[in-house]
Image 1 (cartoon, rainbow, N blue to C red):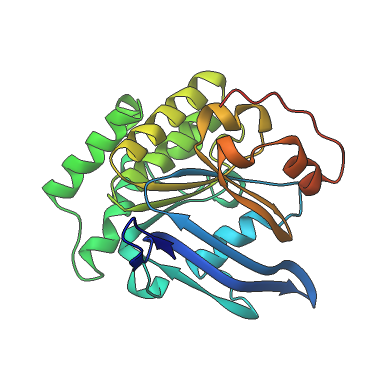
Image 2 (cartoon, rainbow, N blue to C red; image 1 turned 30 degrees about the horizontal axis):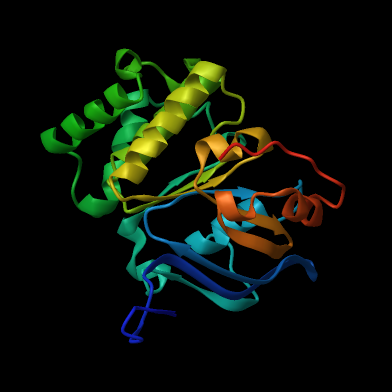
Length: 254
């Protein structure tokens, strides 16, 4: 809760709220009692060491993984009621890139949620998919089999699939993994454009040095939630040390 100048209590609007979330594999906690409130319109990094539960948190928000305790709300409602508000870019390694389909077909899959099961994509959906491919610089590869694309090109295709959904929230699991510097800059520029348009973006990220440059919000995670808030306020040596368990010294130029 926050208060305005007239001392009238008002509720701050959050894109995602996570309360008391606990996830365990074989009775071993992977996430423990996580509380998280993500405001609308931020570009947020989730950072932490390997095994910290970063991908698990994303999948729990999406309902892919069922927690043993806790709740997740998307714009104040259960995710199942808000599924069309959320787009997901999975980890590159979790995708079957040998599946026989073209880049355009993959992007058009992003339109299925709004169409429903009984309708097939038409001219409108194809046009939107081609525009998304152009936005990520992959229009020339629209008929290329995804197995024939480089790692960076494949990542751009999945970003285009998310863009065509025109969602309010984008969840991305390591979108910069295995891409070259040019592709990384192209992706982050698109994410910043989405933020300017009022979208909320949540990104699992590993490169601590680029956090101040790329993001305005950050969540530190290591099974438990360490800290979450604006980069300028909480991206510091103290929270880095608490998260990674060793003394960290990172130059912050946010």
